[in-house]
Image (cartoon, rainbow, N blue to C red; front, side, top):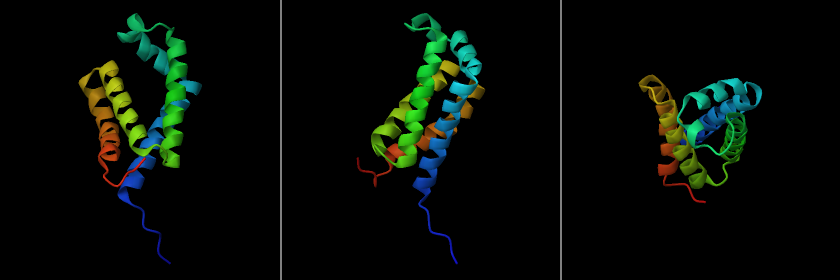
Length: 120
């Protein structure tokens, strides 16, 4: 018996969905990690909401992105939003090592955006 063949782009989509799911769970169940990050960034000076409210927004955003990636809905639009969101994360985190850490996820999102086989 052989396993069904899975397209590499499907694995990338599921992997990126897992990244967003992990971040959503962190935002909801360990919000102090994101609150600390937000309070140390320039965001706290430009946000019209508190750091804790912003973390709820992160959780909601990341949950929706994960669900859409898992269900393969909104393909290119979701991948574009994930790319923009990850660039924002890289800017907020700001240190070279943190940027390097997020780069793998960014390239996964870019791969999904550039996949020519995707149609909305």
